Image (cartoon, rainbow, N blue to C red; front, side, top):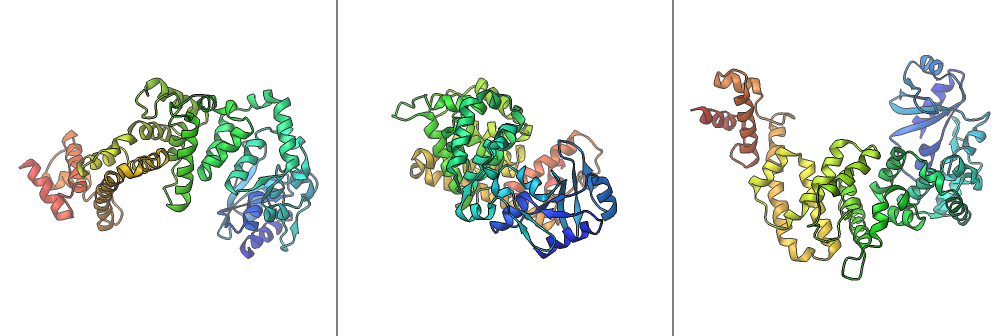
Length: 428
């Protein structure tokens, strides 16, 4: 914390008062180390502060211009004080656990008992002020995100006020831009996907951002349950895996769990078609999800079931080269989660374990290349291949490099000298 206070003091040398605020203080109170600190500065001229401290750039996009930079080895983002005092600024923040500030002398400003709410694991509107929701209804989703991620209860008055607001002002929720929905949803499902979706359902928010998921709650699976139940089952397994098994934190992985049964009426997904993929693409595009992530979501959903049959090292190698290492690892891990959630993991355990072993061997060989070459993904560059074989640039060079990659991944080539010998054999 001392380094953070030194940052505040450095800024205050410019003549502007500064405080640690928001997520930084909340994380510190929870025992979490923030990677970037958030500050409030009582200056209307961020450019002047930046010039005075000699670092940072001002981002004027959005309603609150921010000074972003690094000071004393610490990354920071600083916003102008909202109101005449720090207490006024804190009153504008949506949740009491975010309405805490720390002064440069280490003193804490906590007018709304946010520290007590953190200790009691309670989510509460700052000052029990429902006008904060009326000013920005998306704060409801943010409230549920925090409640899910930190396993906190929502204070009874906050819950009552929010439910009443939703009952009277559903039209306000419909007016929220879809990309803002997307940002909060993605944050909400990264750590506690099942809990977050359950809370959204409890507050009747699903129709506002994913109507098809709401519809799945009325679609029977033929076995006495609904497809919504299956979505929650796999999200629950994913959620447990994120903590217990340290599954790769990959947005596509969790989104595949959320969208896996969208638009289908069969548990084996055999009736999936391009229309269903289009639904996923349209939603995620509106949520402003990167196109690469969208492609990975669809690829996982469409392909994970094939891992319930044996997959050779050769096939895994081609998959890794065609997509990426992480994409294949995540798809195989998703197959395990799906099998666990549907109750047939023991039936396929041996096949899945063998497939995981085969993939591990392929990845180990590619990792060996990086170790032997100080980080390069190949033993030889295209220029080196042309020099070795006395060839000119062209399509054939690319074909040789691709072939060499496959030879490495399948264990036929394991060193620079072996790579040279393999290349020479291809043109002999």
